[in-house]
Length: 488
Ligand SMILES: Cc1cc2nc3c(=O)[nH]c(=O)nc-3n(C[C@H](O)[C@H](O)[C@H](O)COP(=O)(O)OP(=O)(O)OC[C@H]3O[C@@H](n4cnc5c(N)ncnc54)[C@H](O)[C@@H]3O)c2cc1C
Image 1: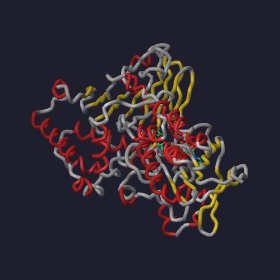
Image 2: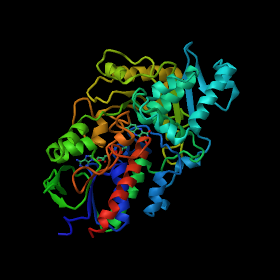
Image 3: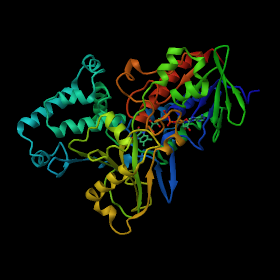
Image 4: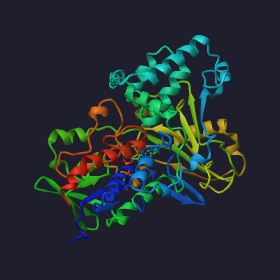
């Protein structure tokens, strides 16, 4: 019966599931890893087409290298199997394009005096911006914890700083880093993300040969190498509970597997409501989990070009009043407001060696949206193209675009966690990192059923999507490692 009995079963090989499965397998545990996809990475699964390596969605891997990704590869002895190709392009930079009230687009470079001249910033405004930045960089943990219940939007609004500084920090590290409107993200988290984003401790950008999904597919090879098993293209239908304990899983084709530890990477709401059943949980807990809010989605275009269009990996375009509250995203979702002044992320990984055929690029251009996958995406797509034509006319020269694809919202749940509630499914991370759902208010990885854990974006960890999920993998691993000792 060894084929059906394991020390632990991990449902999902997204960044969170892949991390915990690899770490446990590396300790010699007999692991079963099951994923509905054909490879690891979840929402960051890597695709290969026409010589390009790319993810369905754009990404920034913050913090830059070294990160917990490197720690994972090192711990499971696979550092020599993954190569950070971004390190081969050290001149890469993030290009900030600010569209001012008067209609002029400025390329911001805080180290370059001409930026301040072009923005017509007074000495007083420059000094106030510098003081605000220094304050954020040097703030004590105690002071930071006092900002857990204040929104990034309110915090920045109350500083006496010019519009460009306010919008740049709030849009990039409040909304952008957490994919959540800045009226919901805690100011403390925006400040921590800001520090990580510009930290000199993490100087090199990060992207891996074989992509981000490829990185996790390499990590989970640890499972079969230590005698465990991976079932790809297999969907778990239920987590089985007996005498109040998690004891195994049943797949959609009816196969049953048992283990004293079940670790779900299938989303906390999906795990509680769909895989286990809310009736097995304390009523208050189930109610709270069902009421958790999703984060925003990204919607936009993916272009395959036959020419180099972007010189660098990352461009962020933000117009002067681009900070939309959550309610504005709801109104846009209902078609009652069109995007007119939203920030757009434009990027490519093709500038790194081995990622695309010489001279060709895969370019992403996306904006934030409500996570409801059923909404009409046309207004967002039109808005993005209108701005791209202005910012990157080369993209629209004859014959440059070989193919373009919509980055929609339905693909997100197809690759990652399931859509189970109305208005949910397109969210790029999972549950939002918002006031009331962060810090001590965030669900923990140990669920109130013995033997049941949930790993990934939705539990514990901190930061930008994949980083949060991998950190959750480490935390979950540490919490259960001792329990497993007594099992074998
Ligand atoms: C548009 C977009 C942009 C993003 N940008 C960034 C970025 O710039 N930087 C960044 O770090 N992150 C970014 N992310 C977020 C990142 O992809 C997620 O935070 C991360 O993938 C979450 O990891 P996870 O392990 O929690 O879950 P997921 O990636 O959702 O993985 C869940 C896994 O569980 C599997 N699964 C689910 N249910 C079942 C089941 N019943 N049976 C079997 N298998 C199941 C899925 O197939 C999947 O492999 C972005 C995501 C999107 C969509």
